[in-house]
Length: 399
Image (cartoon, rainbow, N blue to C red; front, side, top):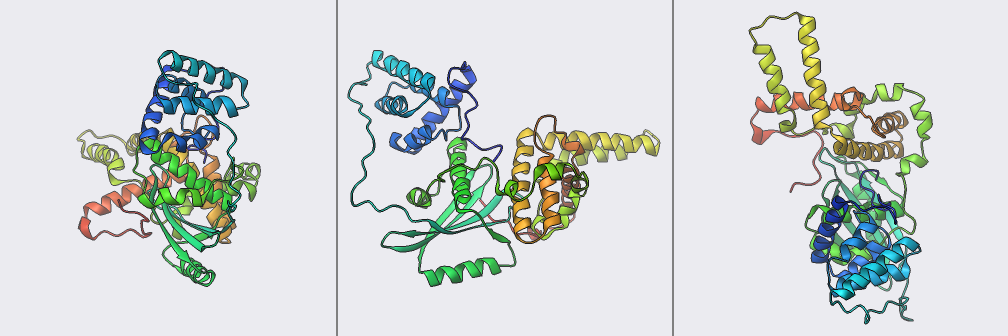
């Protein structure tokens, strides 16, 4: 999605690499090589699916002085169409050679397919649940394997940490039909069908978050990664952009002004920010109320409004706004697919209002409503036994 999409490098070949980019690339390479062998990184690098700019990766590889670095650089030099990147990779190889790394024995040719290799069969179905307040959602992908029937893969993904859980179940066609019907009939969560390639992209983007954040990858995921596969063509935008014209939504401000009403929709009823996030705001409001200095109601209201705006801007920083934009895009698609067009347009308008520079969360109707609900929930929690509190919408994943 917009914040987490990694298929476009921020630095083009030929542009100056900053020390920060080089350091980030070095850190990513060290972590990625620790998680999986260099052969597993070749596809990431060649698909530009790295969380750091590819030119910075090339520069970082020249500092490693290992056979794995030489292999990756040789692959880049042989397969990239970018002339500047080819030159950079060759220069990096020369630097490795001067440091004693054997670069001459590395040979990279076209991969040869076995005559016995059977091509992957298409994904039969892809389902996704709503997103909960913590950014978790469930994904189900069913794919037919050559000579061995169907496999249903169930994942829990998180928009900050990546793939949290993963399981697979061999099924027959009849069993898959029954399981899908059971999933759709579950009243606790709402599931909609996704385009298969988009579901693949969501999984791949989640996996990149595991690597970039250091979140452990579920053991079963490694064996299923290849089965899930990669989309042939990346999605530049979410599916909702193919269903609703964003310019039409931007041209009708009422959709955004009513976006706070989304919190009354079943799938949004569990959304809130953590109580600790609003604690400082609540404490400041309490100090103001307990103050012995007498001020007019108008001035008191103005002060409270200022405190609230400051709290909103602190809680919903640019990274948080990007996550909520992505969440709202996904929820807009879910609402559209479940025949709720007005709610879908409100969610989409709320997402569009979080795009671009100069976003002020203090003036965003949905975020203001979410903040108000979160304060009310935090206050209610103080008056209840914290061990008996329940949330309207179940959380999909509890670490």
